[in-house]
Length: 99
Image 1 (cartoon, helix red, strand yellow):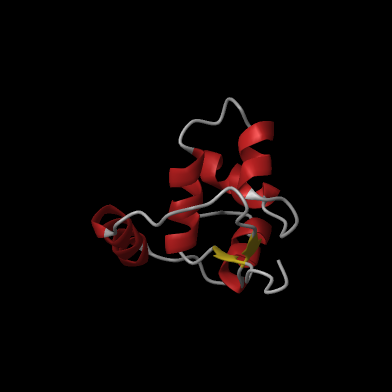
Image 2 (image 1 turned 60 degrees about the vertical axis):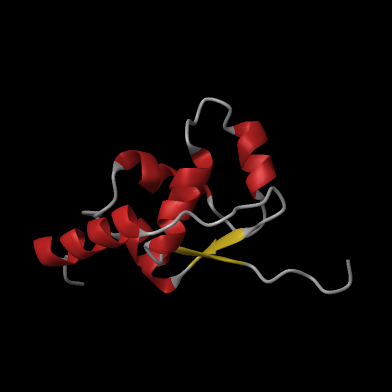
């Protein structure tokens, strides 16, 4: 596996800084994408420790509301989830139609 270079990191930072935040609801559930799973198993990750820890916790079962209740000391939880989403590390599970 190759480690992304500084130009890749710069493009991610530029995309994150210039993007508008998305609305994240309490009942949203996220799963790791292929890129997110690669980041978790990489020995040298590209994410800051704080985001990497959150990425490890995202499992496709717990909702954002559950994370908010369990991670009371994690500041800017929604912004961190939004950042992982914009980086392509996680994606929303589709909403069920029978609700």
